[in-house]
Length: 302
Image (tube, rainbow, N blue to C red; front, side, top):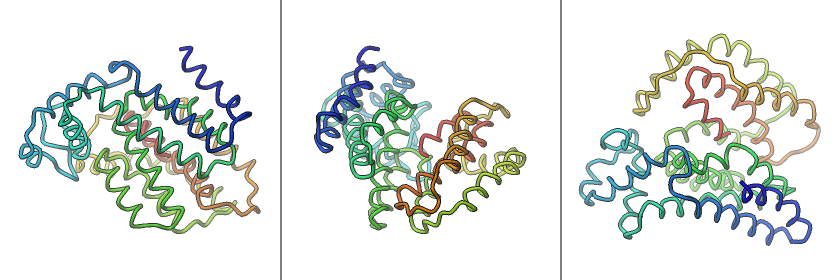
């Protein structure tokens, strides 16, 4: 616990004495070391990931080609039937002869570089961005929810390219992230907003107001649309029924708070506008998540 507290509290201290580039490099390095040097059983689902790695490492190249699919999960025994990109990622690492810890290290490298680059490029107060990131669920997820977080990190790089208008590179990153975990498709609305970044107070209020009818219609939306999409991607999780939770309350509070503090007369960058919209979109995803905990967790992509 002490190492996590030190990591968190060191952010404002570093910022006082270090220049931005050096600070971001050091903060990213600390993030990498914490993620990479932890025990290989510290994190949710790591037992399954480790077992999958051992199974995948025994596949031949031709076995791999026969089992990997793009739109659906690989043809592997449950619970190792994961996305094709993740299977290939594991297989390539296994060919080096290293054990499962190498997967953790590789994920830590990609995650820390991606987050560091994104904060360096877009954050006006880098130490606060790292502080918030380390305090919230996204960082915690990186200890065990490996596929989703790896996909998120790849998408962050894609966001950077979207901000620069490099759409071919954005598409490649999206497809790569999608091959790692299917829920990457949730970010499509955000990528569209990069292309058409129109933002004003009336539209933001309307997006909040529409959550009310959506809340009442969400059961039908989940039953007849979301379930069908999940079945197509071979990601059919059993819903638990409607359950309100604290996280959606927090999301709504944050979104309303933004409505009160945003200066709508100010000209914002595309990335700032997309960030504002991300909170609004996350509320809709979270409402659907009240029927399904797996989908509920995907607000991490917002």
